[in-house]
Image (cartoon, rainbow, N blue to C red; front, side, top):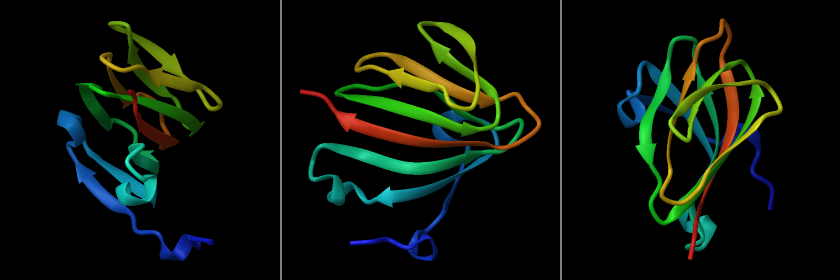
Length: 116
């Protein structure tokens, strides 16, 4: 099976999890295609000045791969810089958020998997 780029739907998400601005989410897989193992596998775009609000992952872990752009992510209570190629991991029970502090869009892949 191949999902062509033009078959994927981009969903605008204003104030995602209490963040600023509108984030674009383009799911690669729908939750049912993750077969109960997770809920998100998507490309995301965060414009300059926008953010995903601080939130906690319970019963799941999120892994984010930064493809382009720069910003900050909350990690163990501290805002740390993120750059292209970085991988940010938010383990089960941890809190995180991400904000674009740069001049270009942050483009990233997000994967949220359930933990047992």
